[in-house]
Image 1 (cartoon, rainbow, N blue to C red):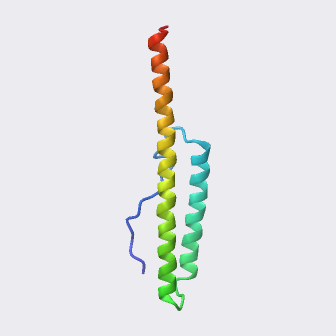
Image 2 (cartoon, rainbow, N blue to C red):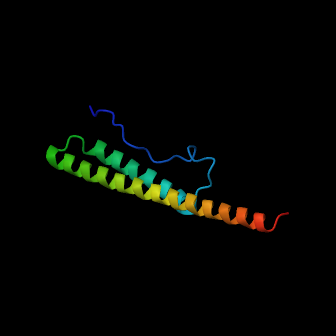
Length: 100
């Protein structure tokens, strides 16, 4: 029986509900969820694969890809937040120069 793992989870829409996600982030989250489901399906289908070392090696590759994808998702979030911060700063500066 597989042991429970403490792997990082992708951000869920609920965890970022106070933030407006970019279209790229929304698409990424959908595709990531589908990709993870494919991996889980693959693991179930191949759980009794006769070559355990090959199974484990492939599982490790998936985990590496998963970590890379989660890093990419974090970069997308940082980019969005940075852009939002720049917009806020520009608006703040504008209203300091041109008060209402």
